[in-house]
Amino acid sequence: MNAKTVELHLLQSFPPSCVNRDGNNSPKDCTFGEVRRARISSQCLKRAIRQADVFAETVGDAIAARSKQMRDKKLIPYLLDAGVSQEDAEKAADAFRRELAKDDKKASQTSVGLYFGDDELFALLDAHRTGDARWKDKGARKSADVALFGRMLAESAFLNVDAAAQVAHAISTHKLSQEMDYWTAADDLKDKGEEDAGAGMLGTAEFNASVFYRYACVSVPVLRDNLGDGDVARKTVEAFLLASWDAIPTGKINGHAHFTPPCLALVAVRERGMPINLCNAFLKPVRATQAKGLGEASAEALLEYLGRARAMAPVDEAAYGLTHDLGVDIPADGVECAPGYGQLVSWVMERVEQ
Image (cartoon, rainbow, N blue to C red):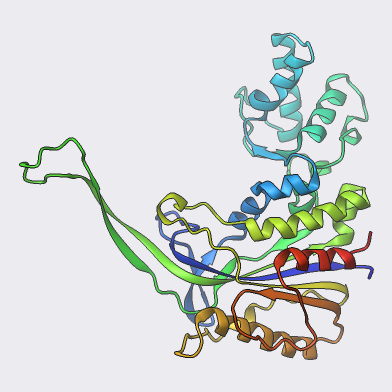
């Protein structure tokens, strides 16, 4: 199959947790289908994907860094290791920083975060430092995560990268039930006879327990163009799929230990037709019953809507694969089933163009 897109749909149940919080330190939420839903931002999920160990391991290369501190943390150390003097290294790094960010300030940090892998960044720096008029064309291959998630530098548009992956905000499949935790932290050195013996700190924190629907789509041709290497592009698709399974946001994880992987994964390897986000399966929030939990009810709603969406689409030339651990049979007409997520990823890779 000459794959156009690889689309990933996940159902993931988190226990009481605050995996992604807003400016008020509360779990993020939104309105969908006229009811409040728990939400995990796409930016949070993308960071969790690119920082999952399996991502770099599968691609065979380090991920890029996003930072305002490239001058001190990347550029100057690289030049010093190359034998450049401290004074010349600082001058070269400052000149390069100003070129990228159009920032004339004498601060060590850029006004915007720069997002580069080491190979690309240092190749550009070397070409710029040596006065090569074609330095803008001298960057090495982009790192896999930059090729996936894109890069935008308004001041240096020639470095912009169109994202090959689109990642949706995850939303709960059901109505949000936000709860409050009243907590205390004991003071181990307080005397037992004191009026507030043991109490050192107290406060409140919000949390919820929700089943989330996650969706992402990867354009294989765009990824291949961004990387300029078909084999690396293929490894990057595989890395994205594997890391999406491991991508658990770390918000307040020490206090909630929400290490719960997805309970269902549905993939589409599409040759023709528009990608399909299946979030509208949950416009009407699902409910648990005595016979069905939220996981099973969400899975049935998802796959029932998939059938209707495919029938509605004028073009839907795609192969669909599924795996889950719900312990029940889920009707899935026209969908191939795999025993586990690793086998499902292998099934996808067999259908992605070499």
